[in-house]
Length: 375
Image (tube, rainbow, N blue to C red; front, side, top):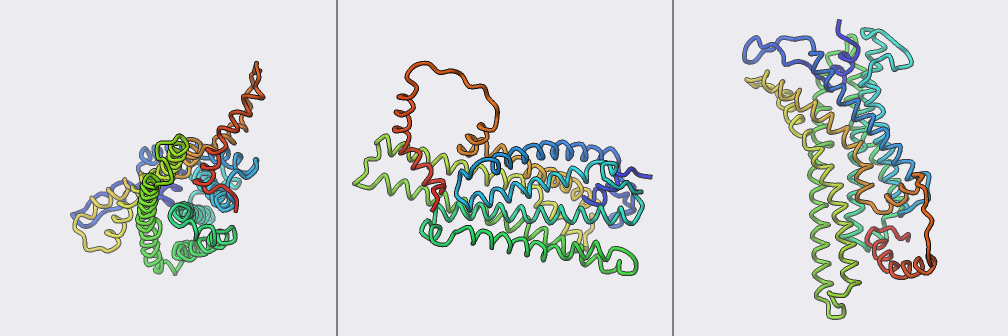
């Protein structure tokens, strides 16, 4: 009898050994490889533990302090961090032994199987919702840089709340085949599940991989082109001296913001790339009529393992991205850490007043470029 964690991971991630080939097109079922499953489980548990701590720290900095950004950005970032926390927490539970669950049941019982499948459905819904929240954050930055007038006039907190509700409704609608697969996967209705699985595979490939990987680079390229045009226009204007210290400071601040956004988007795109081959291989297996089915099955299992680990990393590395690329988040987070203050000597009051007067234009420029001045 296989262990509980073998059953959990096999049910959720469809991890199995390369099947024993009877010939070039037919494969024989084979029990899961415990070493492979335990290796994936150890990596997943490690990533999930780090992700839980990172998201708790991120939510503490976002919620326990005053709002240090505009309301729309704050709502999107808090919602994304909350979804990331639920993703890594649920992934941690599903990766550990079932003894961590409040109700210990037999791995072969129907109720435990239904609980495992329901947990996997929740994880899939959270993954898709998190992807579209990332698209909303990227869309907000695109409007802020490329369409500032439209952004000021129409991008409000009410609009963001409506978009979040619409995304949640669309996630539930697109995950309906997966929910049907869980409900109909017992008894005489089992014949309905292949169609539900095929639809869920196509939805994963289209809405969670292809569309985000197309939209995010387009928005990144649009922001980059707009920033370059803005710098050329400012440098060629006759009323502004390009070599002044104020102009160079504003230009450096704007480029820092652009690099921060590009870093967030590029890391997200890189970590999403391993899910694309897995989706393609699932569609190939679903279409049928292939000769080397065993080779494709082996490649799909490997890419599924890499895709799941990368998906957990997406929910775990956001804290480090915010800490390195978001100066205001770094400042607020450092205020939460108890650091002993050193006694200063000399005229600190005059020095602080001088620094405040010298950095006030930089602070205004940074707030304008970040979109953090409240309208």
